[in-house]
Image 1: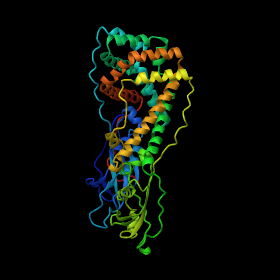
Image 2: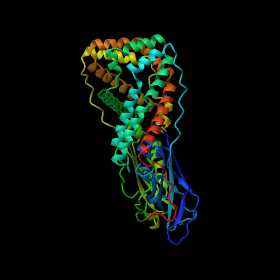
Image 3: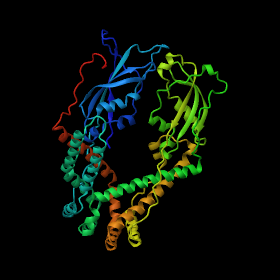
Image 4: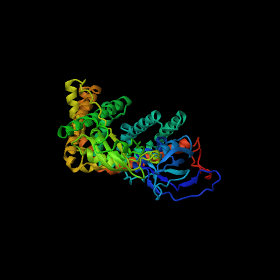
Length: 524
């Protein structure tokens, strides 16, 4: 997946009165969209077509600097989804309030121009020349086990997903044109992709290893084994999803066996002891932590599906921020819920209208809930292949996996993927994730072997097993030696695919990014 760069430009702060002259102020932003928000909100179709764009939001500024009433007053090109994507990010912008207490932006609105930009396609890794003695074998291998067909199958599946989830602001005709452009681009690039991939493969294999690979690939069993058929792909994708469910469910079970994860939802008991009921106000907290902020402070929801529930009593500050917060109830009790609740509470802001009604200085309840979803574990796997075929297929799987670096959860991966985990819970989290991974790997191995056992006969499975024992270690070596080159090649062709698809797509429609009309006044 390509990374995205979104650049928000200068912001014009305009007087609402039509008679007032236009003036510009530097944007004094307290908060802007995170990198995660920028990437996740880049329009799906634009990403696949390598399209850049522009959208401008017109918003009203509240007393506390948050934006409300945002609308798209310009987008280019239209029909790709840049306007709706910009609108989704409007909640992530916040201007710094005026310095004078009680001051506000009088009858003001703000325009936010947002440029959606993509990084340049990375250059390909240096492709090694094919040894003249290996070239006839490589040419024949391209015909017998064409690696580009797997790539085209992946492009097709990605295109199908775009058809089902094309994003807001994109009609069916536009999505269909984008899908067709992607498939045409994949067909155009397939010969080059096949050439480069096989060049790296030939560079890491000896002539004898290539010959043995080719000998098997040319057999009827080898042709079927290396052919990417849609029904096989669908079954393996379903198997991977099931293994993912096993990993999440079993990791949660292992983690919660060490630490109590469950707790009753916090319920506000009424007026807190020592509080004057007349000074208590139920203010609406309209600004809340983003999903990324919730994950960083309470990572257990995304990792193990453990929810956080808390009730606090806080004083409403002059600018709408909670102050002097006290925990009324929080759970689960064993995972540092109280500390997390206080950190999350600090990211709230009260409804600006409540400040005008005298909420500042009074206490108000603040309810927190970070939802953690744990899917139901799939039903126990029941193999359908005969016991003899299943055993042979398991041996094929093990031979195919021999020599390959086994994936596992590393401590540094936890921080990168899930944010902060308190030291007191780190060892339990790591052990639980490893247990979940081992269970998922065992489930996938059994399912993989069952599918292979259903597709091939015992003689064919023995033929495949012999091939994997003879050539499998060499292929594993190719994967290890050329890992970085294959990854770089994948990124390059992903970018080139999007660039070529864009040229095809834009040949029949306008994709140029137009400049917005001059600012006059915010759109109504």
